[in-house]
Length: 129
Image (cartoon, rainbow, N blue to C red):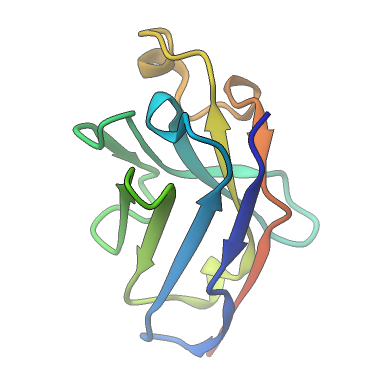
């Protein structure tokens, strides 16, 4: 079992930056591929970014590519999402998620919420215009 706790959300003006953190419990964090998803009011949850076990592979939704950066520190059991040039349409609750499968099928489905086994409680990001 893994527990995930997000932090770093808040209110920021358009063009600003935030860095989200997701701290994981347990001693097997390096075995989990990790993802960030978001859900805006009245919309379905959508993929934002994902990172492989070692951090060697990263993936992004087209809507955030070039503005957001996902990274991880396995020694600290933490995954990060650096968000720059924020837009009002980035407003959402942001969730981190962990995939315990630890196999290559993740590379085909990293953007699908069903791929992930553990979820955090979410952190609100609000971008004002």
